[in-house]
Image (cartoon, rainbow, N blue to C red; front, side, top):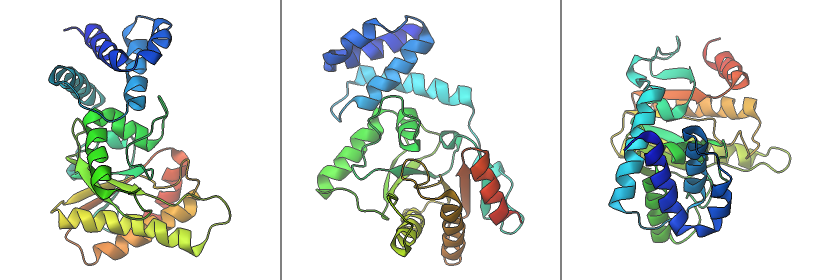
Length: 261
């Protein structure tokens, strides 16, 4: 099946489930790029539910091909910061890293971002992993029976990501002046992820900049907390490598000032 045919098959399958989007589908140009973006949007808004083997095979072939086209970044080959051989600073797309686990800044539903095409880390990770990730998250939430508390962590498979697992953590949402409670909850996100990774025998973890996007935690203070908490936690941990994966030049400069000074 050619790429465009594969994408159109996936779109048609999802449109059969969600016919309310067929009118929008008619407005989408028939080229592969526009059809692929529409597929991402459909995947983003799809509620958890059973997936056919045929759909999963086509989806996984597409996402695997895209993973290889983007290029897998091998965490073991990234240079450590001068002050600590277990810490790495890397700017780029976290979905390219082959860490044992990458960290997703999730929301309290833990199902991913349902805003079609949104560029938040939650949406980016779910879009690259495939719909199986939302299914596993939904199973966790059904068993849990309540929304995910801030500052804790859950572990899932990585599916079509290079990373073997995803650590999901809900950071604090900042609606006013930053409080000590906000700081402690953010630190708890980092501690919880590392503790769960160690419990499961994982050796490498890549963190995004938790809570600094739509959750509005000030970037400089968030980075200070992240670096201090990770350094403290690693003093009594068997984790071998922690990557601070930053997006954008501002975050890079902030982490450079903390790790490379």
